[in-house]
Length: 89
Image 1 (tube, rainbow, N blue to C red):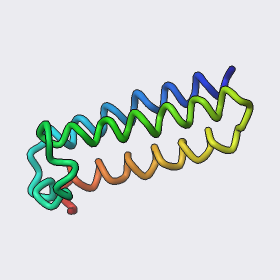
Image 2 (image 1 turned 90 degrees about the vertical axis):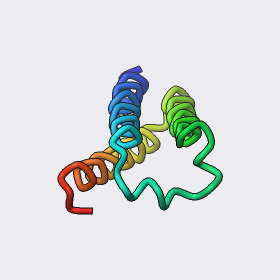
Image 3 (image 1 turned 120 degrees about the horizontal axis):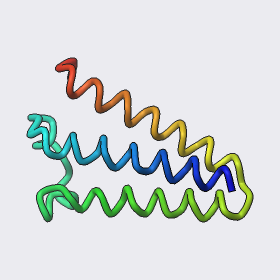
Image 4 (image 1 turned 45 degrees about the vertical axis):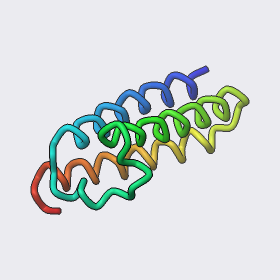
């Protein structure tokens, strides 16, 4: 049960960072592949949701490894968002 709660909380963080980057208007968003551009890039949020759903299902089945992988993914997303907002990219 703890894994599900942790993955859910990490998912909230991922969605917040993802949405903030999408709304930032950063020039790097112009390099997004064409299949993510519909709906103003919001289609990538569907991919984010699919990843969260998969991690939640795996955590619910008792696989703690998937929770750790999702935590790593969240960390990488956080670093990416920080790089974009700090102007280092």
